[in-house]
Image (cartoon, rainbow, N blue to C red; front, side, top):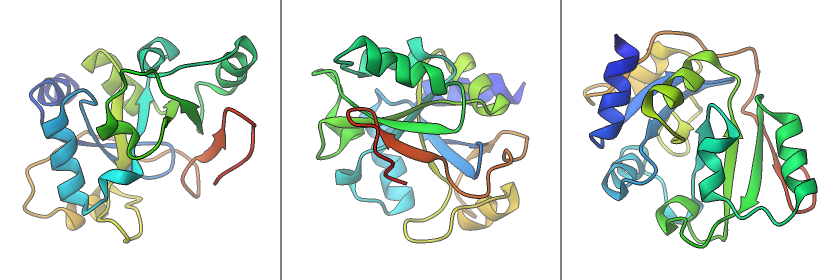
Length: 180
C-alpha cells in the first residue's frame, strides 16, 4: 500500500524517502521541474551539481543517455543491478535540471529491493539523492532522515539501507576512472 502511495505521490510531483544501498534517499519524478526544484530547496543544494537517477532496469534510464558504443553499454550492464553509479553522456533532450552544468548524468540500476520496487511502481527512473541537508552527513536510518526533515511532509517507505558502509562507487563510463 505504501509503495503504491509513494509512486502516486511521485506522479503528483511530491518527494518521497526510501532506503538505498548505503543511505536513505529522497526522490522525485525526474521529468517534473517543480519536483526537482522542491528537492533542491529542501536539501539546500545547488542546481549546478546535477543528480543521480536510479532505476530498476536499464530500460528505465536509457532514454536519458547517449551511449556512444556497445562496449560502454556492456560495461554498465555488467555492473548492474548493483551499487555502482556511472557518469554517462546525456541524450540531447535530457533536461538541464537533471544534469546541472554538465553534459553527463549519474545513473544506477539499483539492487536495493525497496528502491527498485519504487521505480517499478512509478514506471521509470527517479531522481535519487541522499536524505540530508546539503553539507550534512547522509542519513543511515529512517529516524535520522525524519529528524533532518522534521515538519516536512514526506512519505517514508519501510525498510533499511543495504550493507554498504559508504555511498556507492562512482565511475566515469567514458574512461572507466573511479570518481568516488
